[in-house]
Amino acid sequence: MFDRHMRPMIERRLAHMAKALAHRHVSANWLTGAGVVAGLMAALSVAEGAFWAGLALGALSRLLDGLDGMVARLNSPGPIGGYLDILADFTVFAALPIGFAVVAPATNALPAVFLLASFFVNAASFLGFAILAEQFGKRSRLNGEKSHFHATGLIEGTETIVFFGLCMIWPAGFAVLAPTFAVLTLLTAIARVRRAWQMFAD
Image (cartoon, rainbow, N blue to C red):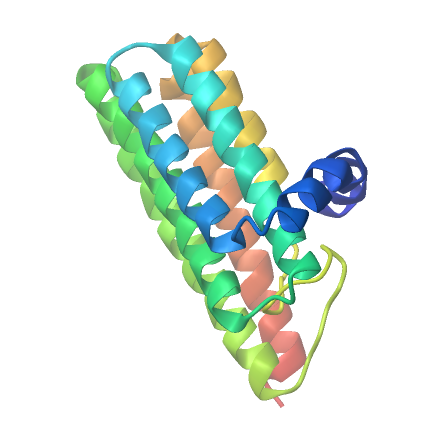
């Protein structure tokens, strides 16, 4: 919901760094990979109860995720970069709930399963929409230049980052926050299916 508003502000602040990396021929795909590693280390830190380390590593992961697309656009992006970027995001956002389930299985395991299920359904609605949009030649730049049709919704990247940040700051609240966020994520998927039906059913 907030991605379209946050992205221009973030990109203005990262523009100098992105240009410096592109000038030094740092690969956007390397940044994507580094972001995945940082995200997985964040999940591992959460699993070990090191929540502040997880917060720092998670922030680094999202910083690298923001930079990779900007560097790719400066260095003539290719289709594989967009594919790797989507895979990286889904990998990190799948690993973090597992970390919370591991650190406190008695209270967090079921909420984590519900959250992961909602992510799975939402991802299917997102990627399915992108496939349909490609078939019908639809384009969208609401969330900036993307290698695919980026269908907006109630829960997007900004909201997900804020959610996990809150969980790391207040880990005892995961059992309450996760089901709430899962419901909002499922509502996002339902709204996206409704939009797809309106746009492509005929």
